[in-house]
Length: 343
Image (cartoon, rainbow, N blue to C red; front, side, top):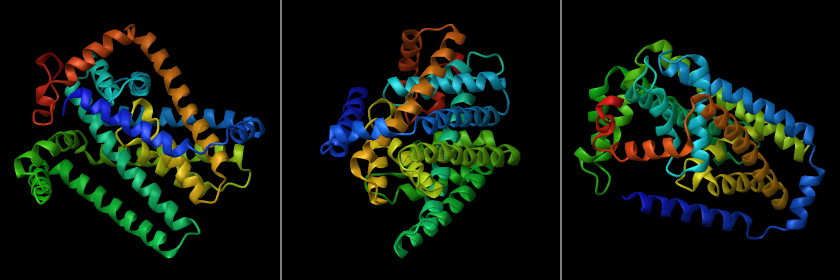
């Protein structure tokens, strides 16, 4: 699929999601919710957000096998997230790997592989959080059953990732054969699709790195749940922590959907749908969704800009280099498609 088609699909999904989420908004009621919010809790939420970002920088430092200084891991993580905030197609991941690859101790390929693993661990952590929330909340029996299934699925996913890190060829064969059972997917195309992910797992074949990276991923998402809960308290003083867990898990799922930069649209729609399903008023839920997304956007953008100044490079320069590099990272080439100087 061409880049403009991917961009058009993402913008289209965001536009539809925003329309569905905000089409019945009472502007007056939403503004009243903002006026009556307890801003001390929002300030606390901003502080906890920064703690969570520090943990994510620490995790990336570990997943790179400590080839980057810890400070570089923190600032480059934020630079990458800043680019994801303003550019489509998760270009920030390429930017982060590109900047890391300029260090003498790190190559583009190893940096990009660690980011692939980071995304896989995030996916597992989100499923774990969602399972915990569904089991812990006072929900119908089918929801608790779904939580148990998700918990078992996450456990199975962890076991598979651990085995794939040690036995990559087996994982490639297994995954490609599994995907080939889907319509229009051959074993060869399935192998090309999963190869970058399996290759990335080679960097966490050490059990200490694997367990540490996965543990920090779950910890980081728990801190995000605390942030969400604290901001919930700014709007609803009786909000429980487990509801914060559910909201951050569904928001994570919403953020994974193809969309415009920063996940705008699907993120808000996921948060609003979750809160209204929990019985919260729709306009207040919309105000909360805007607030929690804005906190993340502003904090990561500010830290990303500081990191960019620290690197001494411009947004235009990095965007141009990352776009050129991404065209070479086609699914059938994987990291081998990167130019020699970045591998």
